[in-house]
Length: 74
Image (cartoon, rainbow, N blue to C red; front, side):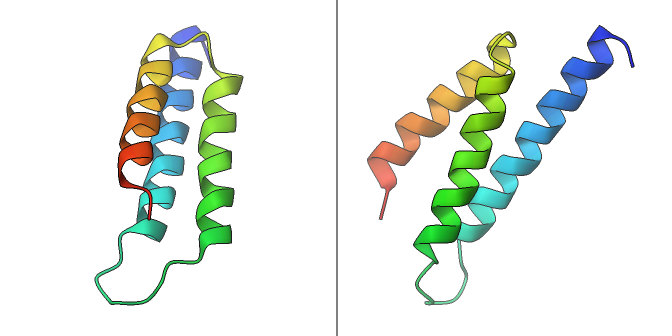
């Protein structure tokens, strides 16, 4: 896989990790989300972004998620 393929794959992985995180936090039912699962998913997302810090798009995405999270954490 070439450089561009690796970048696209890293971005796709970040999208999937963020999707997993949001799936845990947004529930159509009135069940209380599992905070430990949310914390673990959030850590996986930010760890992945840190591992790919050379990709400015992922850094921007992480900054946006962090700003959103700080304003909306339950």
